[in-house]
View (cartoon, rainbow, N blue to C red):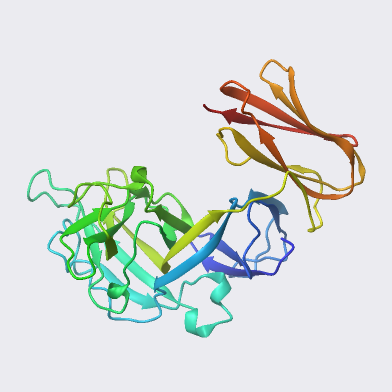
Length: 358
């Protein structure tokens, strides 16, 4: 990355170390980045990496316009023990716990001692849980006390939380109360997220998307006027681990808006190599954006082809300076289908597929 990055190495699973990194400032929307890992990074015992490798990724084409912190998990006392709720089933009450810890934290908080912590949920499922027959394993980590309990919101927000996954295969979801600012008669939940990752990951629930609402004690529709956090919930599924540990940081609300870019915009960052990014959005209807970068000044073309290789549209055919670019493509007159876009500059040729759905 061409910006400062904070790195933390954790002792992880299967006798391996886990590298967590976080940018020191927000990344630009709808941009391509590359992270290089070399043998200057060592594990907790000082052993260097065997070889250098790279991770290329792209940021979403959105920017945050408003945010509300519900709980940054720096304090204690707001959340109950894992078996507090009467709806909890199949959880070992003696071995399961919820606490605030400074052992696992977001890398970007390492220089801020007041934020260098997280919530730790250690859970152990009871393998002999059979009563009553047909009951599901269920852990409801309940938010009981203010001030986080007092934060209310509507469906214009996205509910987010950084979660340090344990790769257990168990499932996680958010639960919220639905009602008014003084009466909360209903409960709604997000869909289940399978915990198939290890390390920090930002999990989101877009409250405006009906497809992201799950089924619990409610009508599975967010049709109330106000909401607040009820709980964090887990369930155990067949073949998943019978115990594990999750960490949580920055339970919060965010609002996003699409970041609009001009038809052909030069971007000031210095590019690394030649890069053709996946168009966004994809699938799309009727317009989309394509980002690319070139390392040398030269004749450059960006051409759209159909699946049979016939030219559909030439987006760029000119001598471009070294830099990063973003191009708009309007497919209003085209039929639904797969299209191929090809970037050619100097002796480099790159291509990707995109899907138009009408």
